[in-house]
Structure formats: C-alpha cells, structure tokens
Length: 112
Length: 114
Image (cartoon, rainbow over all chains, first blue to last red):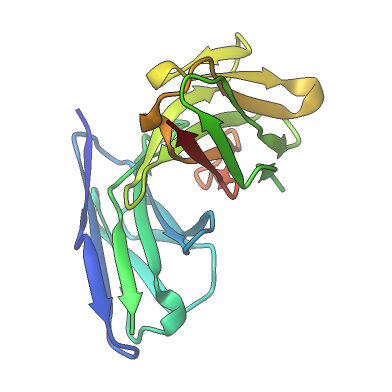
C-alpha cells in the first residue's frame, strides 16, 4: 500500500530564516506531487505541483520554491521566511492520470 | 475556471441526527468531484469521489453524496451523525485530464452536540 510522509511535523522559525520541508511517498512510482498551504480557518491553496523529476509548476508567486530531486521526494523551500508564511503545509500525491489526491499528515509552520 | 462553493461555514447537529453538507461547483464539463474530511491538526482524508456513472456514491464512515448536474451540486449526507464525525469537511472539483486538478471549497466545520 502507499504511504506519504512529511517532516517535520511542527516547526517554529524566525523571520528571515531558511525553510526546508520534505515529503516522500512510498509504494508507488512516478506520482504527481503537490504542495498546499492552509492558513488558519481557511481552505487549501495549491502552491506547487510536479508531474516528474525536476518538473515543477508554480501556482502562486511568492518567496517559496519547490524541488523534486527524486521520483518520490518533494521539497518545499524558502531562503528567507516571512510572517505570512505561517500555516499548515500539506503534501499530496496521486497516480499519473488518476483522480483523487492523497494527503500527508502536514507540517505546522509558525514564523515568529 | 473551475470553482467550488460551500455555503455553510459552520454547522451544528445533535448526535444521531441526519446531516447534509452543501457543495456547489462551477465547471464547463463533467467534473471529478470529491469530499474530504480533516480532523484538527491532521491531513485530509478522502471520504468519497464521483467520476461518472451512478450519481449516488457511497463513501467511508457511512457517508454518501449525490451528484446533481442540473443544480451543479454534490451534497454530502449521513443519516445518523456520530460524535467522531466532528471535523472540517472540504468539497473539491477536479478537471479531467489535468495534472493540476483539484480546486477546493473553503470548508464546512461540523460540530456534533451530545
């Protein structure tokens, strides 16, 4: 069966510090991968998605970036965090050509 | 562009009562439709999905949803709510053939009274 992992689960970072969140998927090959952000009391905002290694599509211009160095690894990064980057970050995957997405447990990021 | 509207931000029901959560979508063709549930501090769990065929779909945890093309709706129902159903519920619409895929509604928070 497929499993999706995210780490860390919780992160508190000062403004201006770098960020690296990691997501890995097990039990499937060549998945489509997604990064979402969920602000407090709000819905999900798609940040990036990837259909293959090194292929990243950005949905929202901001100080975040994403990379996919391996087939089942998806990384969300920032060089300098802003207060507005605080939120709950969710990674998701789906099979190529599939319908539903499956979500990881999320990372709670607080920028202070 | 596709969009999803969940008109109820917060719903409160008593345990054992029936539940209906509303979802309206906007999409130019036959959409993929989904309902997800999120407990506090957790990721989203897929409850059910509609791609084609029978317009009444059954999901996990006793939930069902009905696709009504004429009303552009995909409402979620449960005949008898349990306290453990308290969570936030998200409706989502997907574009066929698109890797970008899902657009989510803003969610409905469900409170269950004992």
